[in-house]
Image 1 (cartoon, rainbow, N blue to C red):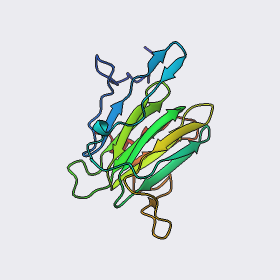
Image 2: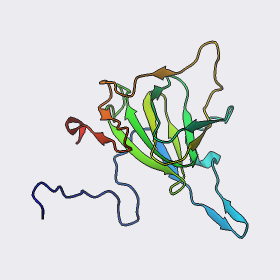
Image 3: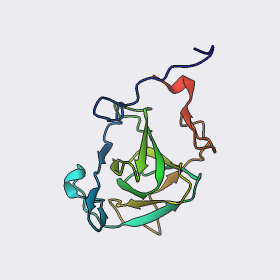
Length: 182
């Protein structure tokens, strides 16, 4: 072995599920494509995937350009329900809720064409996205409340904030800071 080489740790289990300690209240459901003779069908939302029980009252699509980072955002009241329907996106979550049993925990998800996933994000969970692909990535959000133009429930931090122990890279490679690993 070459000196200085670092051995990879386990990334997934024998069923190819990512190993992570999930943030309390975050629910992720990988969705399987349904191949047909004329193409592929992919479900984006089903009420039984969403433990919040809140109705879908608003839906919108976001486009993320290749290499772009959309970070960080959070809601005080709204529940986000995200589905990446095109591309390869890294979704990073940070539990900013002081009263949460998983306060301060980070989760990474790689979602999109290869692993379509429906993710429910409770209020107080910060999220950021990075398009790792070479084409635009598209996401659908089914938030619990329609956007309030007069009083938006939307909070932002810059991508390079010190308040969240994560560093994004413009090269498509991002890692947890060493002091944040557990």
